[in-house]
Image: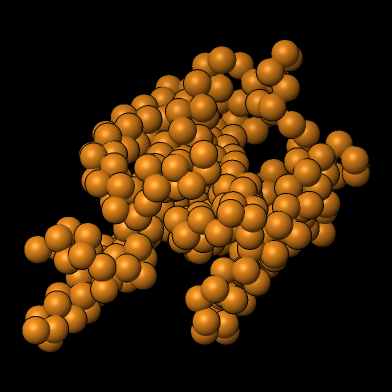
Length: 244
Length: 50
């Protein structure tokens, strides 16, 4: 069953063909959600009663933090698939996700710092949420460093998979840090679906921006996976056919 | 002007949006650069093999 699935859906050749068809759709979905989120979030959502227009940083800060965590979760799933079933495409997905995860985590930290200055009076504080997200950045950077020092492909995939699985413990810590500890960072806003603490007029552009960031991640991920698969399989006939 | 000023938070808001667009642009550029490099390498390999 797994062998059949691997051959049918997880083969590099089929992935390359499927992703070719997906790319224009991802660009269209990203453009739509990003344009709506950006325009509504910046110009039409009402100003916050305490933070005024300063709260509009939420439309880039929360989506980048959410996407960074989602990327790490994807990497951990790919790591299990790499270690248990040795699925080549999962290892490629994990490797190509890591730089994107590092960029989104850095963006979340920097936008959060810029938001912190006018609201808290400081760019940085060693608060549980901020520190755990900084650890996430170090996990991504550690992953990239480990990847660059192991030359043999199979060993590299295994070692980085182990690191990705160990690091997953940080995700619940980031999520619950604002509940478990008394932090300067505000509590959950949109994860409490029963009683969300944000008005719908502010929530819709935020959801659109989260979707846009996720579409962007998948778009760049597919582009980079296609490049890596071409390199890894450069001696095979499907690559020659695809490029000629 | 009020759009730029953003109730006194203009510098903070526009810098975060500018950084976001920079990160997006850089990642698109890197993927495009990698694609060109990979294609060049593989096409060279194909030409060299008889």
